[in-house]
Structures are given as structure tokens and as C-alpha cells.
Length: 249
Image (tube, rainbow, N blue to C red):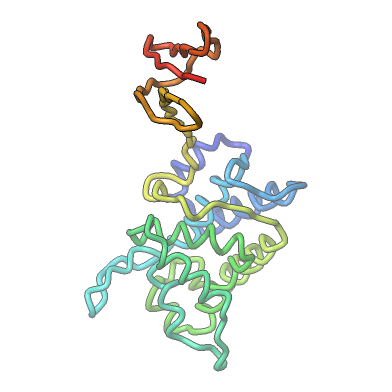
């Protein structure tokens, strides 16, 4: 199914059945497993994998407000609530740490961006299957968040999803989740450009009898010509903007 264009895949994800989403997930995971190096932000199949995984998490997710006024339209809302439940009296410290990484991240503010940030953190930490495993242990909690048409509510599909996500933990990920303010808009990492503005300060120094005093300070934007003219013990420096200063030595 990945033979279709990626744009066609993304347009149709919301209309896919559970079987179709899981099939897409299976194929894109196989493509990630072919990587001989760590999967980083520029990996060709990373965004497609995240989008299909999000479709699996979103399929059948309930949207009405709860009795307490909490909107349940994001998978992040149930993930962050997992720390309130201890299954077999066992607390998962790695999952808790991942959740804390997201809640303390000042660049993500909405349930959507926090959910996507969590996926990136969980992939790095190799715990992407853990939230679904935890949720699956509590049928009442599962039915609270998901309808009967969801992947996570149906035993056959849920088991397959957990199995596929467990396979993903064999892949090494190195994803940036500190600079992710873009996640509300896209899974694609924008191109980051660094501009360095440099200013040249030309200082005129007068030296006499081992004492020195600053005579004049000028500044000009670089680039500057590295050449200079010399007249006696005074050197005149030129910049590309035409500004100059004097250095006595």
C-alpha cells in the first residue's frame, strides 16, 4: 500500500479502516527497519511512520467532553493520565520520565503538539508500545477513551498494534524533541538556518612610554578587507562599508 504516493496516503488516512491503518503501519515499520544507522529527523520514512501511528491512536478516539469538562479529542490526554493508574502495583519510571519530558517542554502547549512530542520522546526511549500496553490492561479505561470501532478497543487489532510497536523498539531513533514548536502544524522538521551577524570594532590606541589610551572606536559590519596601508607607525584599516579607524603601534 506504500506504493501509492505519500500525499494520497495522507489524504486518505482519516478514512482508512483499522485493517488498512495497521497494514500501512506494518509496511512503513519494515522500511524503517532497513535503516543501517539511527533514524534521525531527516529520515525519508519518519514522517510517514508518525502520521500512520497517529492515525492508529486517533482511530475511534472519543471526542465529547467528559463530565469534568476535559476534551478527549487527543491521544495525549489519555497518555498523560496513565500515571494515575498503577497496574499490578507496578509503576513504570521510564514512561513517567517521558511524560515529564513533554509536560516540562515549553515549546509545546496544545494536546496535539504534546502528543506528537511524546511520540518522539518514546521512540528515542524505546517505549512506544508501553502506553498502549498500559491502557490495554484496563478495559474500563480503554472504553472511556475509545469507541468500539477503534484499533485499541478490539482485541485482535490491539494485539497486532502492540506487536508492531514492539518491533519498532528494535530501531534506534535519535530525534530532536527540544525544538519542536512546529508540531502543531506538521511532522516535518523545518529547515533551520543560522545567521551570524558579526561587527568589527576598530579601536584607535595611542601608546607612549609604555602607557596606552583609546583614541577612537568605530564599528563596521563584516566582511572586511584584510589588507591595510601602513604609513610610519600608523596603520589604517579599511572595511567593506568604507569605515575605518587607526591603530598606532
